[in-house]
Image (tube, rainbow, N blue to C red; front, side):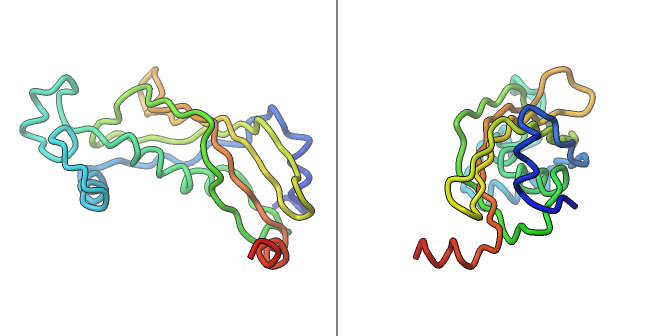
Length: 160
């Protein structure tokens, strides 16, 4: 475990890690469709999707994107001083290749930017590639921002 978030400052441009492989099965795709209301046949109807350009069902791009939180928790170490982290948005997201039902994906994280806009609040931007096992093209590439808080009670009190 890294002792302070500030240690990340020296790591700009460095790859911090790979997540474990995550299997994207039809059950996960169907649950995402139910949660979002996106029941397009290419996601939820294996029989009809056989005749689609994808030859079967594929995950929603936003399902793949939503798994970044799980992947970064697996790939990037938390610090002793870090009390919480939150999503701060994306500067860029591209869905490069479809993720077929049954595929496995993982995230690769490189620290692109690091700033401390106020004491105890760290803004980080990650260049993320989500790889598909056995495929040359990635599922997605993104520039993802998040905030990490040291002793979050103080910054959160100031914000309210």
